[in-house]
Length: 273
Image (tube, rainbow, N blue to C red; front, top):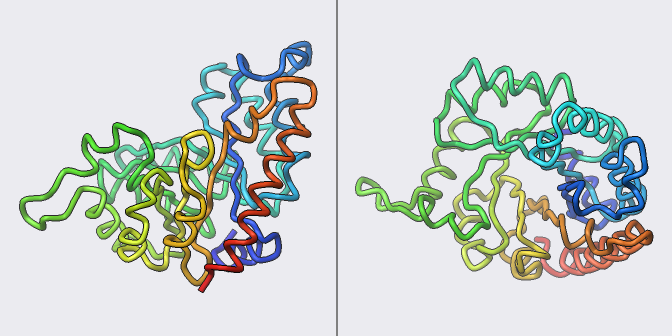
């Protein structure tokens, strides 16, 4: 999916919602455990219930890898089940020397056919480039994340440029790829910095975690983070998929997704340039 197609999806659905499929077998409703593949059955019902209100799905690979081979099977079935007009994100946070990254890119873009993958920038350009060489596939580079430990390294300042590390990532990475293939992870819990970050990367899409269970401010994030093509994919995981642990979990998830989409429609009308 290219950038214009992504923007068209956002406009057509009045939504920039991504639903994170952080599916933990210990948290899904107990009645599903009798299914042959409980994780896939949970994902399938969540997708069916929420598809009208979101534009993307983001499986967090750790939750599938933890289940071994069965988890990978659940993941592959989930990706195959997601309708083709949805943007898919492999939340894998990979990043290694070039030939290893090339194998990661093959795994996620060719074998699993994800549209994008999250990548850690710490090892530099040659660890990121293999992901960018696939047409209409995206790198989503970690920039300023929503976790409390983000300050340990991301806020360190360079004695050469006087810029913080996350600022260096945002600036340098734009020399590796254009806004047609490169996004950045910018946490909603950093909403007070969103205007500054948008100024550093005016054309790029941001994947924004931290709204919902982590307390991020959707309106402030939208107001300060929009660009002319929206430029935001806001992820919500636990607040939607675990809104209920009962047999009505899918219907409750639908209500939560609809509520967030309705709010997003207001902000698109109010703040989109």
